[in-house]
Image (tube, rainbow over all chains, first blue to last red; front, side, top):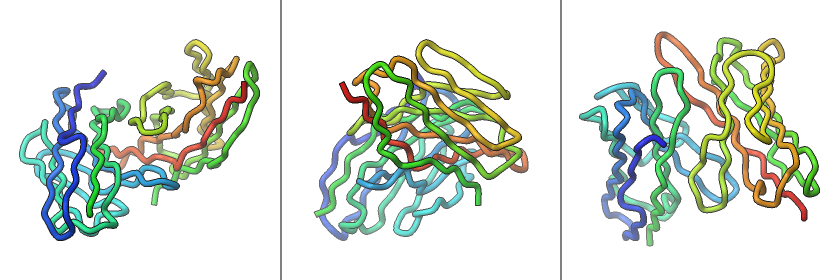
Length: 111
Length: 113
């Protein structure tokens, strides 16, 4: 399995606080993704990266920012968390023309 | 907008039957196609990849690809209750030297004992 680690696995935070989720991969994959998944919805793309410092917005990017300063790390930041951002967040990484592999997810609760 | 369409289900099949899951996609230039299985509360796991027209078999799973019809399917033979999960179709879109995976919303499969 691709080595993808998400941290933290669980987090509870208060409305208005900043939150950063980390995704670390050991496969030297060029492409990395952040998704959120909510009951009744499929995977929704938040942000996508196609290389170091190269990122693009997904379908639900409002309220989120990302950074990729190294190939192996892709950070997702909620600048000021809201209750609507309570969700399960999945990170994925992908090599050229190969499948995307997922991390184990981060369950975020915003109170 | 690159799109991947799946019937959300639930698809209910009796134990031992064949489950057939379908997916259509919008971009004719797509070259890589994947099926993932996701159990409740878990991350999606890759179960099949297919890159050329025709069938690809792996154990009880068969992926079928028809690029002319822009159609991908997954057959699960001898369905077991442990196959009950949501199945996600994913298509790798290529554009300008870059690639990007797009997922369907998933089909929930229920295998009835």
